[in-house]
Length: 328
Image 1 (cartoon, rainbow, N blue to C red):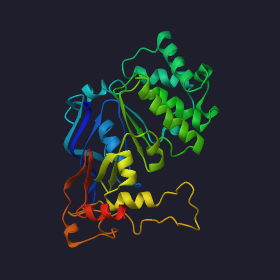
Image 2: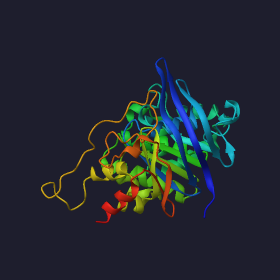
Image 3: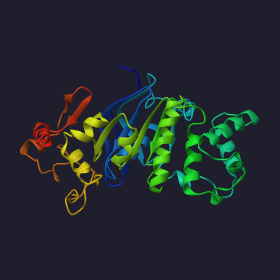
Image 4: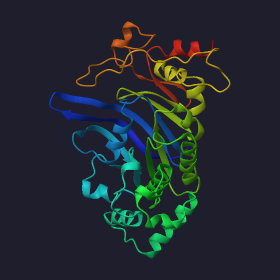
């Protein structure tokens, strides 16, 4: 078994607003192994991007509440900001959700990159830009883009440049937060494969790929974690999650995806009825119970984390019933 590069234990982070606490990340536990791409999926508002922000930014109104996040054995949740800043880009980095809007329209790409790394104590000299040029060549971009403004570049070009910047210091762990959502299908595939190539080349150690699109994760993720309303729902090997989901939410997500070779007249896609719960001062219980066809009285209690198969865990009181449905 490979070593864990990141270990998360009962991590909680809430948005502090005037009306109370929005429990957007409420006791999540998982790990990321060295050399692994872990996919994290779920609807908007499930806590995916809050998880990323908790690990990287933690800016108000988001506030860390409790739990551990050990990166290479160090709990970054307890680390002073000055000390943690030294780890950014080098040990832990992120491709942000709104990466296409990250560039300053008044700065050339080269100036933008130089200013960014300077803030992290890196001198942007000729040797550094030679390295940038090599990485640009990896993503089929000419070094001349460094002397252009962001407005002169397509969305796919910007996304590739942001990926190169985020990985320029060869981080041990890279978070990719919804990096394909604003791209066309061909660009989505290129960017997803690029992330895998960065891992294969040893440029990044491991990655967490956050998305609402399970079809992309099926291409590159070794394992997939499903989140719902701030809670952990299910985690397991990608094939196991896709072919044998044990949480009703996972099953519903998969049922909403089109299948190759199956026409609409033969099988219609099914949506998930209802809407996610409000997370302001939400109480105990399974948070999916309001929309779940398997709901029982037991679901008024918060479900425990249960081992289904090797490396496959689920938080659902009725997972055995769902498993039998999958097979028959």
